[in-house]
Image (tube, rainbow over all chains, first blue to last red; front, side, top):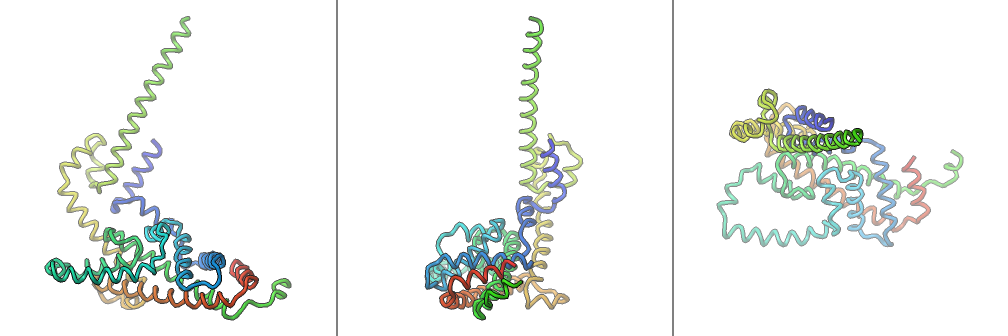
Amino acid sequence: MDSLSLHSNLHSVNNKRRQITHQNSFALTPSWTSLTEQRLYSSKLLHSLRRNSNPTAALEVRASADRVLAATAKGRTRWSRAILSNPICRWKQRHHKKVKKYSANKFMKKTTPEIRRSLPAVQKKARVLGKLIPGCRKVSFPKLLEEAGDYISALEMQVRAMKALADLLATGAPPPAPIGLS
Amino acid sequence: MTEKVENKRTSLSFSLFLSLSLFLVHFLSLETCTRCSESSNPIFGNTLGRYYSISLERRSRSRQTSSSRNITDDQINDLVSKLQQLLPEIRDRRSDKVSASKVLQETCNYIRSLHREVGDLSERLSELLDTTDTAQAAIIRNLLMQ
């Protein structure tokens, strides 16, 4: 009965929201602005990149960066689960998808122009947004907005971490003696 | 002999009570789950008992639909405003009322620019990693974990 009463209490408290699960999952999402999270991400990314054989391709770096980012999110959001579950690098897929999309557009223009015209602007842009965020093509509009907010914060952290890592690699590590002294 | 008979009776009654309580828990959990899946009206939820709520919720679905639409609109407006604060271009004009379509457009543009930036950084890191040796990487990792 305790679990039931707790469940009903949660239901009454979050009465405006339909789904409790994603409310809880978003509450547990790590804060992308903390420096600790950024350092942890940088260390994991460097470790992941070192596993690869030399020389490392840019696409592999990007794929590793995305996978480590999704792992940092710990699968609590839809976009991170989509990245972790997809073994193929999505940036390679992008080229193929462009070709398909082009032919699909031609087909759409010829046969059904009315459907395309009648789409409102918000729905059109929501569709485009759904394609940009991994795993969010067939998601409801409120869910898409939540995923977009979290994805943007994660991407910003990723950019900061990769910049810091590149600067460290470019300047070269300091000699080991001062570290030994301190 | 009488003690044994009494023990059997108590065990039987206990098992019956246990099965009945399990059945009740199962029934109540089903009710709660159905209530969660649909957005129930708070007024109905408070006034009516649990046993009548399922049938009455089915009858009053038209009211729930309109109320859920209002709730969803408020929720969407809240999410759009939160998303607006994340975007660098629209963030500064809080006084102006920006349309949802504009916010979505800027969101798409911003995500694309972040993707481009990650791509450039990936290329840069790829070049730098080829010139860095393993010992240097270990030192950098130690620096990062400080």
